[in-house]
Figure 1 (cartoon, rainbow, N blue to C red):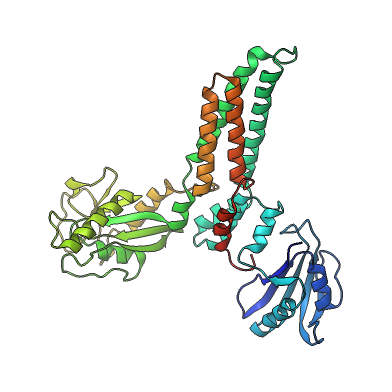
Figure 2: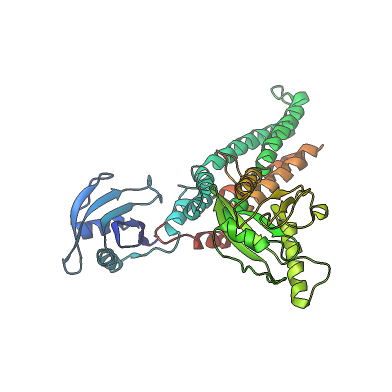
Length: 427
């Protein structure tokens, strides 16, 4: 039997309340040992906690006894709602740690047990990880949708449709001579079903990625030396993140600064100034890195000659408008020092970011999920092109395996270890 685990699941003390969770086969024994009784299931009960080793009082706390399998982890669980002082929490944890069969939980171990016991699937787990790390409203909303199972329910719909298609394919293969199997029309129905399912899957795959939502929309500021890139970066992020100087070539490398505008996460990148010839080898490396950043940018703000836009979608910026004449310049005129045009630039960035991020009520897919959906779409495409029913049935079987990887039923321990290593203890 697995160890019974415990951990503080509320905020670090001192706090108003310290919630200590216990999960495993010895949870009832642990509650009884501390409180002298086992409370009624799923009803809060007040009790004086005492150390079983010497009977010394620990704290007066609320108890919750939650018998499995209908719990967060799928196991017997107990909760102690103690006072949130450091000494109180430490004393209760010491008493638990001395009990046979109990140990402190590892990071993410409660959630891992929920996954193992079928209380959550892998998509909900990844959504929970994103929810714990969310820093913007948009990140919170998308993570909550994933945690609440919106994507998982869509996958379950795909699985059921695949099972129907596979059943029809098997029927066409094995029972085509039976009167109740309409073999003349069944292949057409299978083809139509595959096409409709592939269209639905492709629509999900076209959605924005969770990495962009989590890490921020990449906004790169580029242009020649002394164009005002560093000053503009500092104004956008609200602090002196980059050195500003009249000396050309002050910025020698990329400077990346995360910031939120209007509840949206951005990653702003200041780059080395671009000119025809580098002054030295270090500046040449800086310019190479600047060009690489420009290629990878989601939004490129170009502070150079508007006739020399490095990309068709680059946004021309007429910076330093407080001291430079920009008559005839087609770009957005602004001054990071006076504030002219900064509100317009913020609106432009949010408008462009809206097209790159999930819409209200949408979730975003991680790289792992996108790989699984891509594999599913590939097998559906192969099945749709098959003239041989036997090969078609095999492609549908592979498509079902791809769905298993999406839900975690065909995951690997190494991948799970990496995922749960990022969780906090007690979750």
